[in-house]
Length: 582
Image 1 (cartoon, one colour):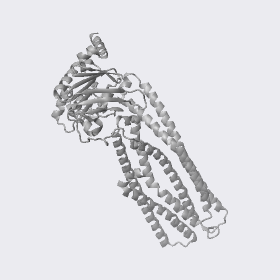
Image 2 (cartoon, rainbow, N blue to C red):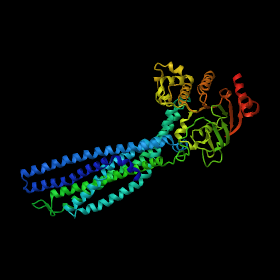
Image 3 (tube, rainbow, N blue to C red):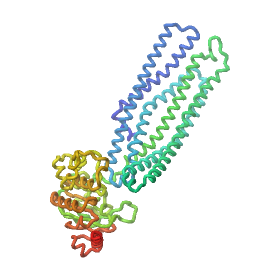
C-alpha cells in the first residue's frame, strides 16, 4: 500500500469525494423503500391524504436528486482519480525503463515492457475506478440492507442468512480459480505484442523473403493462444452474473414462498407484516444480493489488477545494472579522450564459462584514429560498448583520462562519447529534429555543416522540404546509406571527445566513405575516433589498428606492420583484395 499511496496522495481529494458521492447514493437507496412502503401501507389502509401523498412524493424527488448528484459526483471523481493514478504510474514505469542498462532490458522483451506500460497500467486504472465506486457502495448497501431487512421482519431474514454465506463461498472459489489465469493471460498478451512489433518493424525483410504466410501463421498461433487463455480467464467471470442472479431470485422466491401460506386479513397484513413492508423487504433483499454481486465483480477485477500490479512491480523493482551512485568523481568530464582497457573480461550470461571478452589490454591515445577489425562475433561491438558503460565489465577496468568509467556520472560520461551503432535508428519527425538529438541548441548552419562532413547534405538538400522533410518511424523512407550518414551527422553535432563508428559506413560506397573519413580527420582533430569495420579500406589509414578474434586481441599496429606480422589481418586483407580483383 505504501507503493501505491504515492500515486493516491496528489489526488487525495478525488479519492475521498468519489466514495462520499457513492455513500450519498447508498443512503438514498436505504430510505426510498421505506417511503414507498409508507405510501403502499397507508394507501391500502385508506389513511393517506393528498397533502401527505404530495409531501412523501416531494421527499422522494429530493432523495432521487441527491442520489443523482451523489452518483455523478462519485463517477466523476472516481474517473479523475483513476486516470491521474494511471498517468503517474505509467510515467514512473517509463522513467524507470529509461534508466535500464542493456542488461536490464535483456531481462524483459520489448513487447512485454510495452504491455506493462499500457495494458497492465490500464487494468490497475480500471480497478481503482471500480474500487472508488464500489468499495463503499457495495458494503454500504450490504450492511444497510441487512439492518433494514432485519428491522422489518427478523424471521424472513433467515433466508438471507442462508443465501449470503453460499454466495460468499462462491466468490472465494471464483477468485482462487481466476487469479492464476489472469497472470497467464497477461503473458499471452506480451507474446502477441512482441510478434506484432517484430513483424511490423521488420516488414521489409518479411516481404523480401516472401515470408508473409509464415508470419500470418505465427500470428495466428499466438492469437489463438491468447484467445484460449482469454476464454479460460473469462469463464469464471462469465459464470458470475447467471449464478449470482440465480441465488438472488431464488432468495426472493423463498421470501415470497414463506409468506404465501399466511392468510391475508382485511388490514392486508401478512403475519403481522404489512404488504408495503413486504415490498420493502424484497427491495432490501435485492439490494443485499446485488451488492454481493458488485463485490464479486470488484474482487474479480482486483484479481486481474493484482496480476498486472505484480508485473508492474517487477519493472519498478528491477535492480539497475548500471548506476552512478558510487561514482567517486561524479562532476568529472571527459577532457582529452585517452582510453585504456586493463585486464577487461566480460560475459553476457554471468553463469556462462565462455567469455565474450577475455583479458583485454590496450591503450588508445587522445585525438588518435583507431581501427578495430575482426570476424563477425569476435567482440568488437562489445568492446566499445564498455566505453560509455552500455555494459559494465565483469573483470578489470576501463579508464578514460585516467579515471575509471564507473567513477564518472553516466550523464557526463555519455555526453563526452558519440556513438553510431550498427543498427541505424532514427525517429519519426523531421530530419532536423533527428539531427538535433546530437545538440538540441544547434543552429541550421551547424546542422548543415555536420551533414556536409557526413556526406548527407547533398541528398537532404535534394528533398523538396530539405531538412524539414518528415521521416517515418525508424527512417524507413530513407535508404540504408542515407540513414547511416544522418546518424553520423547526428553524432558529429554532439562534438564528442570520443567518437565510435560501429560499422557505420557499411552501406555507403567507398568514395563516399573516403570523403567521410577525410571530413572526420579535419573537422574533429582533437577527437579520439574508433572505427569498427569489416572492410580493410575503412581502417587502413588509421594510426593504429586492433585485430580481434574470439574475444581477444591478436594484434595491434599499423596497416603495414599487421600485414607483415599478423596472419589474421593478412588473411582478411588478401581475401578482400582477391574479391576486389575478381
